[in-house]
Image (cartoon, rainbow over all chains, first blue to last red; front, side, top):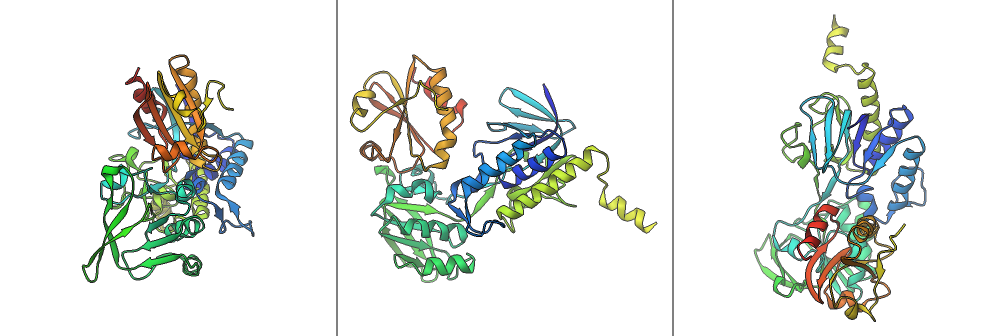
Length: 320
Length: 107
């Protein structure tokens, strides 16, 4: 069984930045990329808020650069999904099916995945007109009317992208104001074929029997009035849920499922660190994920060299 | 590095190509990032099932008719045919073990 100083689970901005720092610290990190290798940025187009790129950079290009940079310093990558971790005692066992690895420190950067509506039908119609990825599936709705559900940056980005393909884009949001950043709101509102349905929730997506999306059944939350909106595609941008199933019962989590961290990147288990969206339900930016990945690598390095001190102990020392 | 065992189907030859045996078809496009992620898995399946299962790709940009006729509205989508009948549909990313199980059901 292969034994490693550092294993990093996940390969988005957090995982790859952790890999870069751990590799430069000569820890020869092993990165288990996961089925969604590259993370959420792989599904975006232009990233305009990554510092240093004044004209923006394409999400997949940025991830390819980050990966190559980590690799240049000796990070090792394997494809595939982790199927189980055992955090009960170090070194920690990490399984990929029948293959097992032992890790003296673990950096968890498993990120978050797009949330689906809780309707049951949306998953049945996935790939049949229901999508969480406009850049993947927008192609199929050229010249057709579509809807976007949500009011945050993700929803606005999807609406803006789809407005170039679809005849009309109806944004459906539960509130009467958007959560999205000002710049995204302004951009979306300035596009003539994007319209907004406020205070509206989706009750149902038709038509499962036909195996294709034909309309949305909607309810106005203020008036209770029901309506039906004929559309061919519906894109869901209602937020994300952290990928923490592997750690259930092993690590402390917030009520919303995000991992709890303290004193930097430490989780509730000594030697296990977390970075990026899996532990961040507040900022959720590529650059904050990268920053926390750097923190996790430095924390892991200090842990391995025995110089990572418990902050409460440090506090006692300074007061004595 | 695509496997040589993966065939390329088009709108013109699709119907005939899935007519007999077990055929796994990967609908993809050059601009689709998740499709690129799935590609190595499809390659591996083509190698492993060589001689038993035909594994093929359809570029949806060049072949719009076939995805339309199977109501494919998202990629990557994998369709599994047995003797011309559509047996399984897998939308989005999937891991190799799950796909192997799905194929084994029809062998």
